[in-house]
Image 1 (spheres, rainbow, N blue to C red):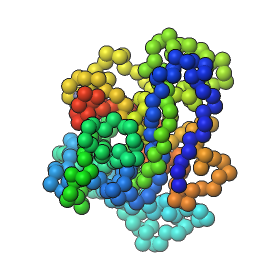
Image 2 (cartoon, helix red, strand yellow; image 1 turned 135 degrees about the vertical axis):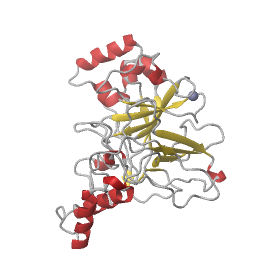
Image 3 (tube, rainbow, N blue to C red; image 1 turned 30 degrees about the vertical axis):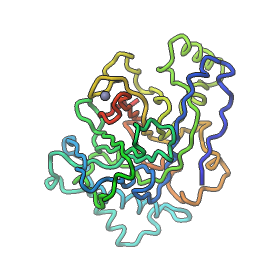
Length: 341
Ligand SMILES: [Zn+2]
């Protein structure tokens, strides 16, 4: 089943014609919990990874003082909780005694004494085949993008918790069957539920921080005359997980100055641009972006029988912010820049 973004409340280029040339295509990914394979585009799914290529590792944050769990236990607990909360049952009603015991074991966490220090394998964040996101900035000769990250806090530019791989699909002959997993997960909120994707091309206009000051001020003033900041909320950048398009809005902090190091490639200091937006929810209440298939009164899509429609990945960035992944425009294989914004 496809996902369809409702038409925008108005065509902003009719009010501000100078925006016309600034439109970009973004791909809403519309993740849905499922069982993606290495041959599918996915969030949190298995990667088409060459068997003879080392799996990336990342220095981990200090061992957490809270409960740490193995990756597979996090997935198991989520699956049990999702199933037990599926209608018509209430939480816990359909679990067997054995399953409840499993939950108790997982909730108790791993023995901290047993946790190793040092680098740990990263986990898949997203995999995108060019056929699903046509027009995304794939370097010449590549048709597969893989994004991996570490389940640590994204706090400094000194550690690089995200890595990119741009590949040519046909060149991966022997696929790695059992990728290594981290011994423990530091931040469960950074582990995506494996999701299949329903990419949808949408038209975006620049967020305020990417406009010249005069135009941004006029758009803001125009929005203030209306009951809400329509440009920000309805007309510029889509909420939720997306690929390409414009960078997402800055919410809890100010954008960096245009010449700031934050908006430069960590490897070569060259220009960067929006590649992938990891969002804590697909939409907020009162938004105009809810897909038509999820509109009030619409039947819940059969492939998504439980869980929250606005939070399919269960990823939360900071206190519900977005993480914008910026790729190096000159050399896309460089380490990406990351900004929680
Ligand atoms: Zn670079």
